[in-house]
Amino acid sequence: MLGNITSSWALCARLSQLQDEGCAEDRHSSLAKAWCTVRMRETVGYARELLGGNGILLEHNVGRFVADAEAIYSYEGTREMNTLIVGRSHHRAELRRLAHFLTRLTPLPARQATSRVHH
Ligand SMILES: Cc1cc2nc3c(=O)[nH]c(=O)nc-3n(C[C@H](O)[C@H](O)[C@H](O)COP(=O)(O)OP(=O)(O)OC[C@H]3O[C@@H](n4cnc5c(N)ncnc54)[C@H](O)[C@@H]3O)c2cc1C
Figure 1 (cartoon, rainbow, N blue to C red):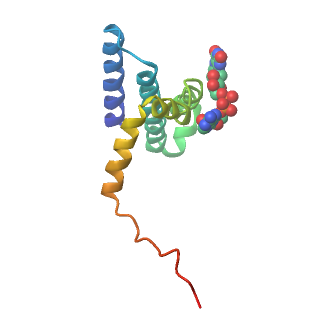
Figure 2: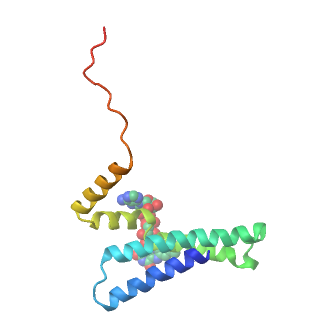
Figure 3: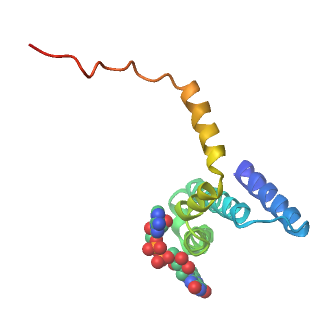
């Protein structure tokens, strides 16, 4: 929970710095939204789990935070939408470089002979 909160805080602080410098772009906001809302959902889930069955009762308040997290996850744009924005903003050359890097990490399966004639 502390790791989720700290990394979300750090991302928002960096976004604020970029905003102050006049360098903030949509993709930066989308990355922060995607990261922070996913981590928030996970964190309130842990809090619910910590209280066991009591975690879903209104008098313990955690259920309220779970409902808040679900609402914010949708109205700030879901992870799917924000990751699409981040992904599409990247230059094709960057994606090609990444693809090249990944294919070097993952050995491809041996190629099957396609022109073999069976008798
Ligand atoms: C509490 C609350 C307050 C709100 N307040 C406001 C407000 O003040 N003003 C306002 O304008 N709106 C408001 N909204 C609406 C909010 O902006 C929308 O709920 C939000 O944009 C999601 O749209 P949707 O509900 O139509 O879901 P959809 O867009 O139908 O999404 C449903 C699911 O499909 C996925 N999905 C959708 N499109 C794609 C795609 N192209 N590729 C991959 N996955 C996709 C989404 O990730 C999601 O998981 C509010 C919503 C809530 C919950």
